[in-house]
Every structure is written in structure tokens, then in C-alpha cells.
Image (cartoon, rainbow, N blue to C red; front, side, top):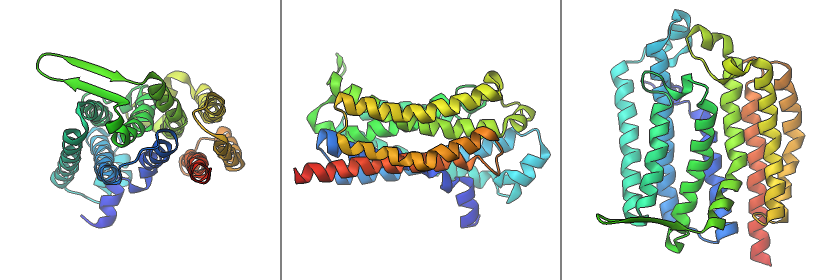
Length: 316
């Protein structure tokens, strides 16, 4: 297997979807919780990327095995197109998952049981998102699970790793009892700050499913747009995108953010025309990229707002 084939198998270009929740969580934990542990954060990043690559490889492998279209199987799917060995693909998947498991267990030993619970929940969804007799990605649940798992899951785990010593979220567990304790305001702040990430990540899956609607039906993949209809699916795409800005405004008013977060609205200069272009036509080769560009534009400015907040706090 060549390096190019490996990168195509794990779709390395799509890793922005997991990179942004991580980076924004690092900035948010510094601006809101004023806590940061570099070593644990970097170690988690390696495990996170490995698991993300594994789930993408599983998705491509399952699509190859279950494909009803010979054209898709041998001309579009990387495994058939590049004539990759199925045994090699499976070995890569298990290797990536194994490495991610080592990272997760090591960090759980260092920081507490709650990390193991959150990590296992994300891993369970990540694996069964594409694996099994009825994967989540082939149901009208893909947008929800991808958005929550990456937008909230990665975000919350990153913050937990940097605040575990403050016990803002903590799980006590032994053979006789267990107790989950924490700060309600901290939990609500984390959930609210993750909403734009959930929405923009879910929109990538929604845009993909809208663009592939006919092909998915041919391959017996009945995704959310199949049930909503193309018109309502496009409306939902717009709602998710623009509600992300509403979440920023409400968060600022509630005190979760400080005034530099308003820099997020600079992204509208890119997001508005890109969303308008996708609304007009949903063609994979022409407009699907708009959803990824929206994610990059919005979350880059979201991160910029948090970075300026951090600098402003340091100078205040």
C-alpha cells in the first residue's frame, strides 16, 4: 500500500472535522477554566487522530464490502480502485484502534474513570457508525451522532484532560459505590460552547448525504435527506449553519465568552455566499466542498475570537 492510498483510505483531508473541536477546546479551557496540561493534551491528540482515521477506514471498508454498484466498488471506493488487500486494510484498522486504546487507558489511569467512560462512549459510536448489520451512517442518525461525537465528545474530553485536577467533572468508582459530581455551570458552559462545533460538523455529513442522495438510495443507504426530502434537508443545512452564530451571541450575553468572540462573525463574509451556493444546487463535485469551507471559515474565526480573548486576558 502506498502512502497516497493510505491517506485516501483514512481520508486524511477530512480530519479538520476532529481538529477544530480539539483546538477550540484547548483555547476555551484556557479562556474559561484557565487550566492547561500540555503533555496530556498532545498525547490525547495522537490517539484522537488515530481513532478518527480508523473509523474512516472502517467506513470505506464496509462501503466496499456492502456496495451494490460495481461502478462504485471498483472505480470510486479506494479499496477497489487501488486494488488494496482487504487483510491489509483490516490490519491497519486494528492497529489504529489499538494505539488509540493504549492512549485512552493511559490517560484514564492518570486522570480518572470519567475519561474512560467518555472515551468508550465515543469509541462505541465511532465504530458502530460504520460497522455492523445496520451502521448508524446508513440510518437517519448520521448527522446527530457525528456532530455530537466529534463536536461535543472531543471537545469535552479535551477540556476534562485540562481540568481533571480541579474536579469540575469527576467520577468516583469502586466496588461498593459510585458518584458522579461536578459543576453544573461548568457543564452547561462546555455543552453550549460545543454547539457551533456540533452544528458545523453535522452539516458536513448532511451536505454529503444531500449530494449523494440518489447514489445512497441505489446502495440501500437511507440517510436523513431520504426521510426529510431534499428541500427540507437544505433548509436544515441553513438552520444549522446560522444557528451557530446565534449560539455565539447567546453565549456572549450569558458570560461564557468575552467580547473578542464577536470576531466569529467575520466568517459570514465567506459563509453566506458558500451557503447560498450550496442551497442552489447540491452536487458532490461542485458544491459539497462548501460545507467543509463553512466549517473552516466559521471555526477559524471562532478560534481567533478565543485566541484574542486569551491575549486580552493576559494583558488585562
